[in-house]
Length: 396
Figure 1 (cartoon, one colour):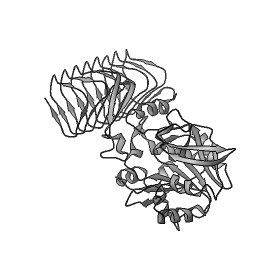
Figure 2 (cartoon, rainbow, N blue to C red):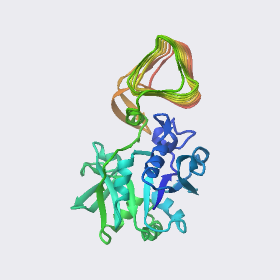
Figure 3 (tube, helix red, strand yellow):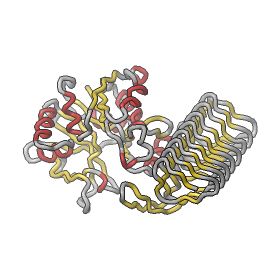
Figure 4 (cartoon, rainbow, N blue to C red):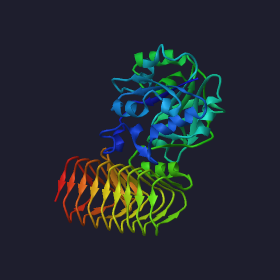
């Protein structure tokens, strides 16, 4: 069976982290979201994978190559204009050879969920699940297993069963996508909605893990899921006087200095220098080439690669992009906040802050909960920062 992974989109609501990478390449548990999807397919014996790429496609292609490193055979299809998911499918004519799977490349899925999808061997099927936030997705109503209606991102509550964007289709569905595009329907859900009265489309509840990141703070939840319980894997150097508790993974060339306390689940990449006397608490992932200074405290955070976190820094519920430098005595008071994304405010029960890549934050800076600092910004010593800071800003 062939699988199509849709990976052409940008993920504008996840800025500043998608300014230089597509959403599918955001690191969760120290590996791209897209890697979870590829691994789930390969573990089910699906190795013929077509990746539909577009925005910043080079980041995807250079990482996955021909797929052999992951046990797959990857073919790339370039969607030059990201008009929608059904539009992406029209690029696959002549490539798909029969029944096929469609998966979003920006969702966390596991082996069991994909197994549920593969088991469907007739008709056209949509994998569904229940959601506490159905207004972010396509909401379906069912009669027995048949989908009777499909409403994309409804404003008013119409139910809590949503489409996950994972499909198992007959080959004939490609023709319907082409017909839908001719009628101005560019999304898969739009095409399916127009077909419900004439074609039997079935909903299936999958067994396994599915989750999606729509907004930046969602990445923290996905990171916690991805870290799981990997046990202790120590490939680096751990000095005397270090305490490791629970699931802790330490990459090659990383040094954990004396007096440091780490309580998992925590993943630390390669070539890092941690401590001495640093404290790292659960649900934290740290990328490659990261320096964490003495007496620094980090919990429930994503620290990407080549980041410098100086001494006496407090980080909680935060996401730090590549090549960020944080000066000493930095403080983020994590807590409730109304966070603005694309002109809308979202109440978040507990959040720290987010910093885009190549940002430099000086000493003794205090940042309010829910602050988003754009990439390439400069925050001067002693500054107090809150709200949304545009890319390449200077705060004094």
